[in-house]
Length: 250
Image 1 (cartoon, one colour):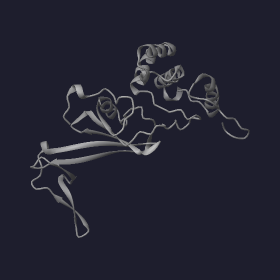
Image 2: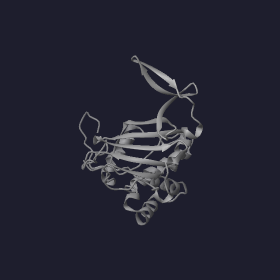
Image 3: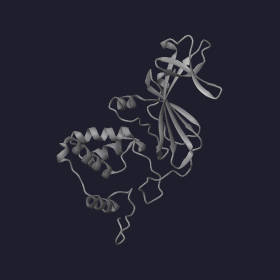
Image 4: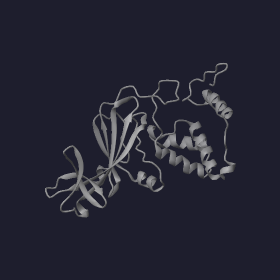
């Protein structure tokens, strides 16, 4: 993957993305992998179907003509798949390729919940994981999918992970949630802001819990969750209503 530093974007740009591609900085995912966390490719397209997401590894070998050929390594030998008389066989490459001619690709695939025909693919080289190519295939639907728990049809866009990490650092230094929210609103672009002050307060509780021993962490029961949900109608713009019916859970 040959790119100039000026061509590498910090993130996938906001806005409509139809049959297009971007080269982005992937160092955050390299760090996440070292911490045994899954890859994360943020964008503003809406909700992606996590159940359909998958990551594949492909091995390719450059032949004498400079053409890449898909291969499989079996017992330390690079082989190509052949079908002889309806039987699959693995034929070793002769001669075996040198290390410089072996290319290992990792690809992450995702499907948009609102439209299964709209897909995203992120690809990076095993030898150069700090840069990734993100492709969008298809036409982005006009109506985005709301969050799975939402009662309204307003579109759901996850908060930029970089914003979450920034707020966590501030909260760990005991800054007030209200001040953190205000600082982000005043000094950030509209798409790099927390959803509301309540989101900052909730994140603060999570940060405090992480510092406590497991047996002393704040553990809420279902009654606490229901009460918080009801209170959220007045405090959280994301929660529009809670329906209560006798004999049924909210």
